[in-house]
Amino acid sequence: MSSRVGFRFVNNARFAFRNASAPFRRPGAQSFRWQSSEAGAAEQQSAFQRLWNSPVGMKTVHFWAPVMKWCLVIAGISDFARPAEKLSLTQNAALMGTGAIWTRWCLIIKPRNILLAAVNFFLGCVGAVQVTRIFMWQRNQSDSSIEAAKVIEHEAVDSVKATAEAAEGTVKKAVEKST
Image 1 (cartoon, helix red, strand yellow):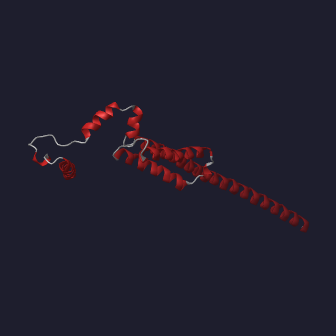
Image 2: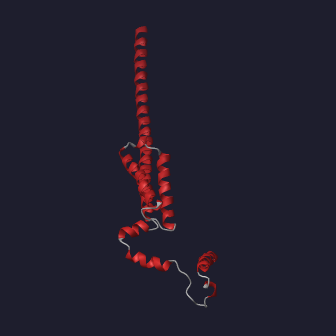
Image 3: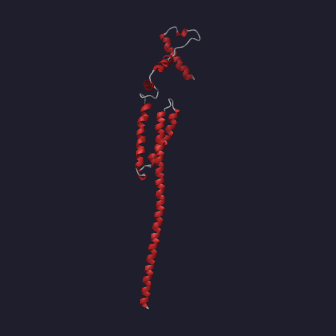
């Protein structure tokens, strides 16, 4: 509350220098207001002018940051076509975390930036999809490696059995020759 009083004091002091009688006005008189002329002007502006002059309008970083950040989302979507073994888990986990954190932040800050919140939400979704693909690929690889180990074990056992049978046959032939 004290910052508002200080700001009013500065505005009134500026007005006092222009109008020498301002400090001596009667109690209850209207003070100098900056917003009275802006309110009428806002009603007369076109939709483009309101967008242009908005706190999150086209001439601010609040508009251009989300526009540029869509490139990250598009790059993530294009990675859906890449095989999961070529994707980076740390990079996609970072995209997922960044998207989640900044989506929340964009809804808290003033002015609330819905464009930036939307792009961060989709960035988090793309990261989550990629991380899920990577984990499913890794799980599939561990399952297939267990199956591969079982196949190798069976082949080794079959090979040892065949070798043992061959050795047994050779020993039987040697015993028959010697008798």
